[in-house]
Length: 105
Image (cartoon, rainbow, N blue to C red; front, side):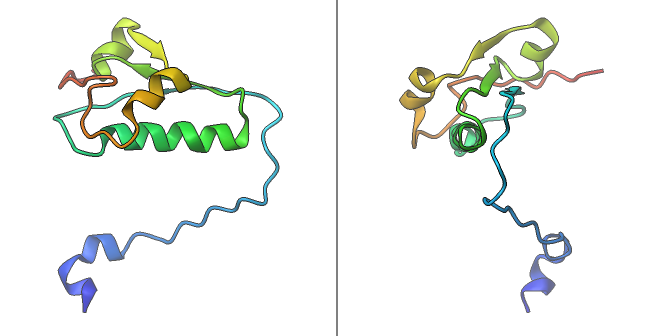
């Protein structure tokens, strides 16, 4: 019944995450950006990524590109440590990083 209403979503294969895996021995440096218009869950996506990365290696660093693709192409970023992340817990919007409609060509 549900498949009739959302056929594309129902065709997506199931993804499983296993927590029994060992943590990474090497910290990573990962970048994230927000693109397009404002959305209510932007901060929670970034915070969820931050929290998940810290589980695998607490020394992993997350960098946020300011103004979306514009920040990526111009090297505008900030280190998203707990002092930055904490202020945006359960806050809607894209204020932490902003966004743009810049296209990467």
